[in-house]
Amino acid sequence: MAVSIPPDSQYDETVAMPKSVTITAPWPTYEEVAKSLGISKRRQKQIDAMAEEFLEQLRAKERAATSRAVEPEKRRKRASAA
Amino acid sequence: MPPLPEPNAVFLNVPYDQEFRSLYIAYIVGLCQLGLEPHIAAEIPGGKRRLDRIFELIRSCRYSIHDLSRVEVSPVPLAAPRFNMPLELGMTITWEILNPGQHTWFVWESEPYRLHRSASDLNGTDANIHGGTAEGVLSELRNAFWRDGAPPVREMFHVYRYVESRVDSILTRNGTRNLFAQSVFKELCGVSSFISELHRRGRGN
Image 1: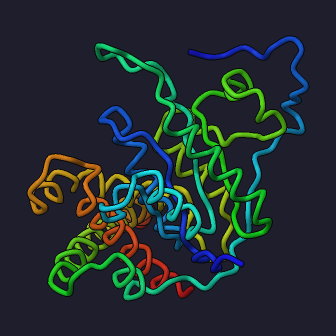
Image 2: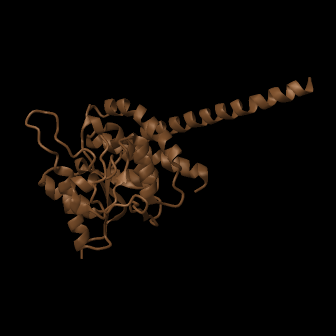
């Protein structure tokens, strides 16, 4: 349910902006994360396999998208050659 | 002088219920994608009083996110408003006031302006509005935590959808149906962090 702005509100949508922070700490490595979470080596291997599976799916999607983009161009060239 | 907090650690103060499932997963995936380490109260080993454990967690984290979007009367018998999230936000604000520069807290809501009605003492604090969607959570996380080399929201959403689709197998592997169990939380963090690192390596960051 949407909430209306109270009539006496000092809130101004044009200037309101949630705060944000800039993180300058180094990116943690996966090994560091696994260590801090207490993930065992055996579990780490299962997690690695899931991550690899995801990336493979993503790469397959990207390949499919690329080939879909290239196909019409090939057809156009064939048609103009004919 | 208290010990310095972990620079990438984020205390996640969210409701633990099934209706919050997709947002809970989005918070974990999104934070890990930004190279941050989410922490929840369920991770802390038992033994001590729950409130003491939560306070220790707040102290050890550089940031905290307090999602007040579901501070409402629960639909079960003997219904009472859910005060845990505002209580933990109050503890965090006190800690930050007493130790300036050591902690940054964020309030998240699903509806704009509702915070000003539910907790008018927080006037002047602009909540991050996620609109009750996983995509909204990811987008707001990306806005709130600026980091060089952070992935675009679209990429974060792909990872979220993948992890979401694997939740059942993660639950089965951990022998539980409780999404908020410590072991499940850790595995969600592990998968999200590892994907994040592989992606970053792929982008050359």
